[in-house]
Image (tube, rainbow, N blue to C red; front, side):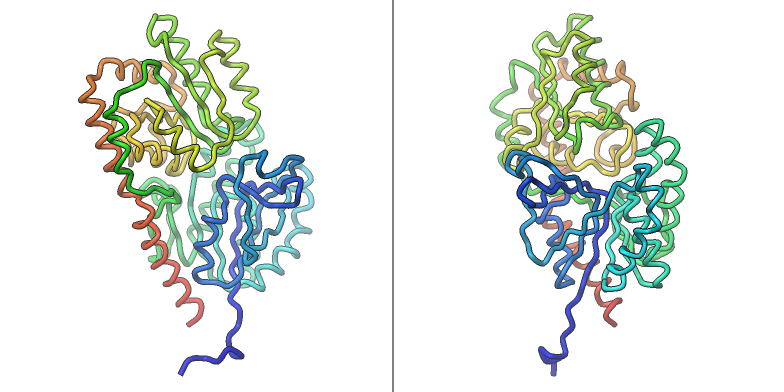
Length: 399
């Protein structure tokens, strides 16, 4: 006979990451990546979820930010400061007591890496000798080394911290099939490869491509922030200048999706004399993103740091002709002919120019191939794989 209601104890989960999360002018929490849709997966095995995450306050509403609101009352956001700031580094030891209290309450720990917030949480987790799951979404070394001068100082520490906490994890979920597993190996046999992408089979995508291609060639890139330099959009702008100087691609537009001011990229484009060919799209909702991808001819992922880029998979699911830098998990998605060395704008220009020599049937075949590859990351398939993995973790903790 099952336990009575009186015998049941609420199960508590803890998810941690640097995020960021935003608190809008009305007190609502919102984000384009750490969404309610994503966080709900953890509620399959727990009743309440604490989300310990770096949080920024905005004077705009969520609607003005064009970000979905986190409304589920079973999800409690715990605001974490910026631990990469001087204040955060100097006073982080005072934070351990606060973090340790949430860890003490938690039955299940989900730590997304790389993240200094996760490093601090896992420090407390190991002191309390609790089992934990890591979600390895990127490479700390690549992320910090390519970020800034300050990032280069932090890179060795963040790399070693990620190596350590992943190696000691009881459960490990990687977004790649090989790259992150090789760079950040774990001792546990409880591991899976499972991307965080949301892709559904897109039957209409190929039909849309059959209708024809734009007279103006639209190149697209999407990122969580247009102000992060390691995403490499400046290399695409430099490639377009090279093509323009050689009288290629007279009618072309580079569209960049993502939040942020874009000041650095505007300066690069303005100095190069092609600001009128670079368009900043801002933050797009899911439906807006899908409509945009249907209009994009060439999707390019020019990153210097990645895990397995979700935006690239989503673009491929819409039949976009796709190019990417030969780093991290991108070669798991694209063949060699579609890859270039990160930061090499001459190679990017060459790859873009090759597109113009393709026949309509060749473009169509590449669209079909990209849709097939993206179908391996179907939301239904990944949800089933992740759900089974979470249930194994749940049984282990509750046994």
